[in-house]
View 1 (tube, rainbow, N blue to C red):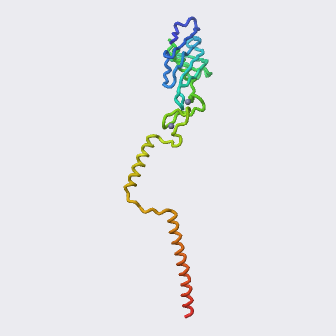
View 2 (cartoon, protein in one colour; view 1 turned 180 degrees about the vertical axis):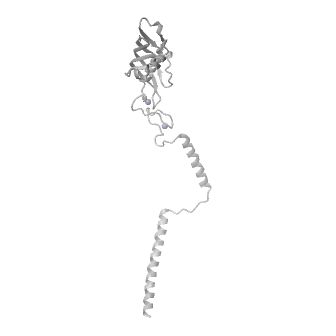
Length: 224
Ligand SMILES: [Zn+2]
Ligand SMILES: [Zn+2]
């Protein structure tokens, strides 16, 4: 819907329109109108400037960031917009433009696109963070189950199913190699310790005997 400047009676006009969801594409893949969106407002012309003020109510539908379920967002806003033509914008210069909250747009001087206003205001109201509820657990990255409905069996091993399959085939290959290899004699840890202890005892006994022997040899040498 466009407001033609030449159709403005006097200098003030009223605008009122209810958009059906299919009538207004929000041009955002992630935000859609859930139901009708209503716009009520006024258009005021003052020289080459045009002021549009109004109120918009709509219900948008977005996807939950975590579980991807649709979430309805009731939205309501008052807006104030100022329009000037591109030529005026150039001749006025940035310094003289009003700095208040009113946002400034440039138009062709002939008509103002109201659809664009509704689209912009609705998208401005949609929060960047979209959750069906604050404690939403989201969906499991492995099996795709909705974790809000209960825990799936992927919880303990957070492994991608493709990696799990690869790991399994690697293990199968490894055990096949093992089965084909000649059997080695296995020595248990306890057996290894027993052998070690016995060896240490033998060496200790040998050193002890050797020491005595050396002592005896030295004595014998001194005596002779
Ligand atoms: Zn959710
Ligand atoms: Zn899972």
